[in-house]
Length: 338
Image (cartoon, rainbow, N blue to C red; front, side, top):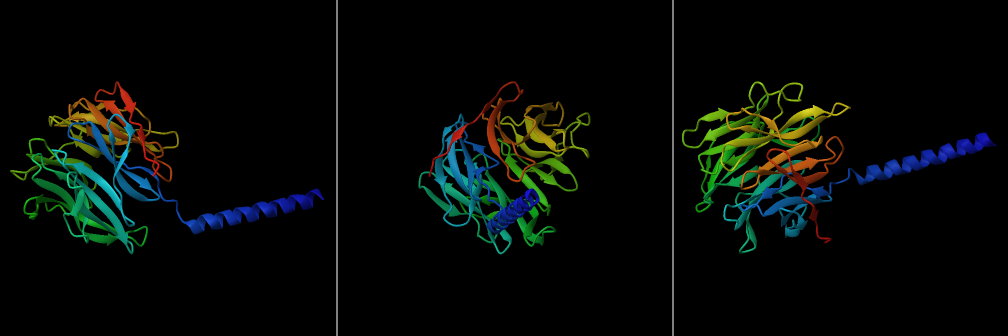
């Protein structure tokens, strides 16, 4: 009798597991809900704007940089996501990227929101893939990163953008010119120096690099940590999300600091001088810390901490940390219920 009961119990458990698996499989992968990766600061440092995902779609919200109640700014009307916001210097306009996908082909359209008119308008046609964009210090032009083509993904049926370069657009005439002819597989973290003379960015071309482009001479200078710097990555630095300080003398970036017990890389934020020397570790979260942004006075940084880097979905938090790493405060955001 005991043996029959045990067999019956095993059959029930197996049936339950099968039904659960079939139900989960039918639902498909769970779509992400939570904060986006790269918040930005207003020119005075008093406000942040960020993406918030709900069931895989991202809207744009604003909140005090000290934390508090968030307000919905822009909500997609269709199956889109609004990401990569960038304030204009005077705070009257906002660049952002409208992301969507059609039959496995990703698109991202460059948009601009006018706070005074409360209206958005597209700056480029919808059949482009524009990764990110930033204003020039005078607010008259923008620089953006655009892919020229696509290639087939090795892991799925989706297409992957490729051949990235930097472009410039005049906001009065909408005339666009191509600034670089890199044709890179990866190009990101675009930033214009406050004097308007340089564009800084990160790229991957066999290894991760940070470069500065002189907009007058068109000369490119690679900026990397001093030779004495030892990355926690096995094959050298994995430099990510470089950010230029307001005075142009310091670069903040993320890199592997160490590894967890199971071998997962743990990223922290570091700073270095503009020539790559005097590297110092700023954060010590033992998580995945990325996307540093300098506050206007240059003494503090806004950073993004992923508490679930090795998991299936990211779990981001925003923190304000001092440049010397001595102080840190979480920016706790209260999202509206609807």
